[in-house]
Length: 437
Ligand code: IPM
Ligand code: MG
Image 1: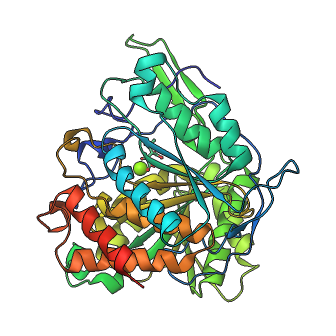
Image 2: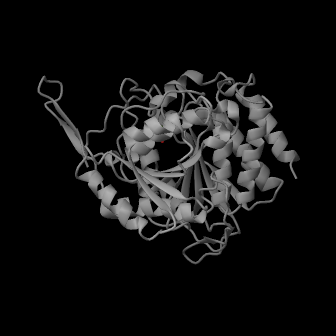
Image 3: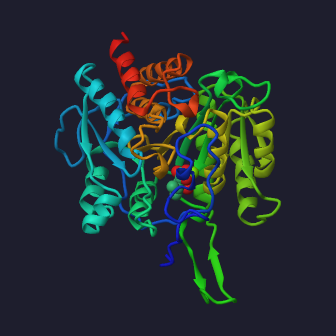
């Protein structure tokens, strides 16, 4: 691994996610340059949990791979209570503001609906790093790996830590360390008025992106040479392995099959990236042969961006590499009402027993911090995805339905056309959650 961790994103060195500067708002522009991977923090499988029913909602991406519904016996022989341990990392910026309410939703599920959840708050992020230099402690990583069923992460990125070393350790420590190779990002509009496209309505925006999550340019292989001189050279290598490409593509097809989808698109840039993306192209059509009932369509990623804003209807499942998935899902967030509406699950798709990571797609949004402006809906939707993964897909639907009604009734933040603040929206949603049968 190179020691040359990049200095953040183009033009936004203080924020791990350039989108942070726009916040979790509708129409927030997409993200910019690449991040760099931190060291792998944890590895291996989590505890065994069994028996999840499968869901059909497009947002139920995790449920289809999840069999963690009924936590049974912890590894290492000890009988653990019938509990799903959820590690919650509120993180930075608006992360704690939205995770406060996500945690209250989980407390409701634990206390009122009696789901066997154990909540574990982790004090990690910029404040902790600035206080004592902690990034991602080995003990926390080990406990997550050994005992947790899921990690819920708010956001990372803080102007006071332009190097972002703690954030990389945490985010990439989890994604890479747990080998969460499928970053599943549903792009689903909950209301017509959230769709910014001419003549298109919510029903036209309903697809899921499978973003490869452990390779590509994110591996942080590369370096800088003659830095600061007119001759300087900067290199980030794009790593694509047969295994990595194939398993992500297979996950996309498997998801399509289980959800009754007819088409999988694979987006690459094989006309320019002859070596790396020829591998993607070849693997895609090879894996497609295993799924004769599903139409496999190749699309160059630049064309995909064009098609998505012209007419997203043909897209059901899109598989792509790490960087393109990052970019395309910000575009996708734009189609569904902005980053404040976008949820995600990072999973080891082929082994649902492994601990998974759930994140709202928006970043820490420094300009919004402390203003009661952050849209909490992405976090509620993310909680829904997590509950589906843990084996309660009906709860994902419940949460999604309530969020849809929040949008429809105007009980939402200004980025999605409402007038309420973060806390009032969350109160409304939590109230509906408590009242719902
Ligand atoms: C995302 C973000 C991250 C990424 C950043 C914060 C490193 O943009 O999750 O989409 O590029 O993966
Ligand atoms: Mg991104």
